[in-house]
Structure formats: C-alpha cells, structure tokens
Length: 256
Ligand code: PGA
Image (cartoon, rainbow, N blue to C red; front, side, top):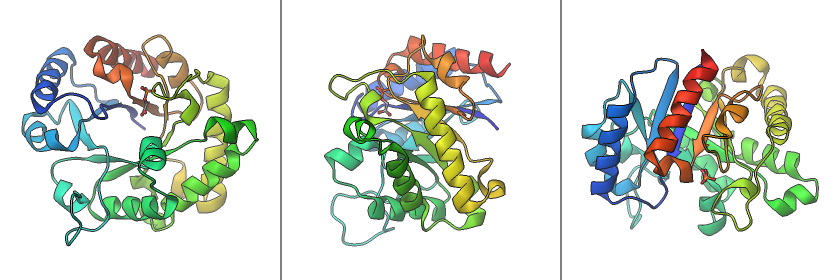
C-alpha cells in the first residue's frame, strides 16, 4: 500500500498563489512511487491547477462537492463536474460537519457520488473533545464510518480512504492538543475492527487510514509509524512549502 501525504489548503491561497506554490512544490520533489502526494486547493483553483499539475508527481483533491450531478442547486459544484479534474475529494471534514452542518446522511450521499464518479473519497471521521471525555469515541467513529459507507458496495470499499482526525487535535480548534501516537494507535485499531466486523477483513484490509491533526515535520514520523496508519492529512503545515516537503521526505524515509 502507498503512503498518502495529503495537504488540505482549506480557504487559503488565491488561484495565483496556489499556482506559484504548486510550481515550487513540483520543482522540489522527485517522483516518489511509494508516496502519493495530494494537494487540496479551494474549488476555484482546481481547473487551472489540473492543467498545471504533473500527475506523475502528485494528484489533486477537492475539499468538498455536492452529491447531485446537476440541476437546480444554486452555488454547488458536483462530483460529476470534478471528474477529470481531481482524483480525490475530502468528504465529511469536521469543519464541514460542525460549521456547515453536514450530517452522516449527507456525507453518505457524497461518498457514494464520489465513487460513482470515480473520485476517491477521503472520508474524515473523528470525535470532539467532549465526546472523548464522555468515553464516546468508539461509538462516534462507528456511526461516522457506517453512516459514510452505507451506500458503498462491497467491491467499491477499496476505493475509499478513511482519515481519522480527532477534532480536538486539529490546529484551528481552540486550545487544540496534540494526539499522542498511542491515542492514534488505539483509535486506528478500533477503526480496523469496525471495518472488519462490518464488511469483513478481505474487503477492508487494503483500505488506507490516514491521521490528521496538527501534523508537522517534528511529529510526522511518529504518526507514520503507528501500526495501521497509511498516511497523513495535513492542514496548517501543508501551507508552508518547506514543512510540507519535509513531511514528504519523512514519509519516504519511513517507507524505506
Ligand atoms: P491541521 O489541519 O493539520 O492544521 O491540524 C488538519 C485538517 O483540518 O485536515
């Protein structure tokens, strides 16, 4: 399985800035076969970056899309429209869940629409600080995974990536804390158990699980060596070229 290093740029970088960043990033990194580098700019930049990107070196991801392919849905962008522009789409990020009110039902439709349009969904799951304090982490994760994957057929399960992002560890969360590698190991083990119990080992053993939450060059190596973790979803540090490229190098070294 490849190691995935995904940069979530959120609502940062103008189209011009995104293009300059991509240009520098492509110059700085070689073509790593085992490390899948993915960047997720805002929707406006996807069209032009899709023409600029060297797909041998990295891939593009959207940060969100709407589950209907076309129709009277003012302001939305569909997976059908993204087809050919991106290889991945982040779905159910905690900012979508808690700022924009996306629930598991909506996320379920988005995951299915992504798969239908041959875009790999990166399904984000993770508990809030209070859910963790009340010992609800496993239940929350189970609901989010089973909700998100409900419309995905068994043979399509290997086209889905799960990203475990505890909300309390995301750098934009007030008073964010760092998750310890042991915290991550425990929940990732749980995620593998849920997947195995629900869909069977064979259908899900190849499903990549990423970790995200305040990842930077000094902790990336520790998270990448947690058993069952196949990559990282990076927000803040992905906006700083030197930090993002350092993390890509660390991923390469961890694999070697
Ligand atoms: P962070 O963001 O790395 O800045 O914590 C991660 C994310 O929100 O995907």
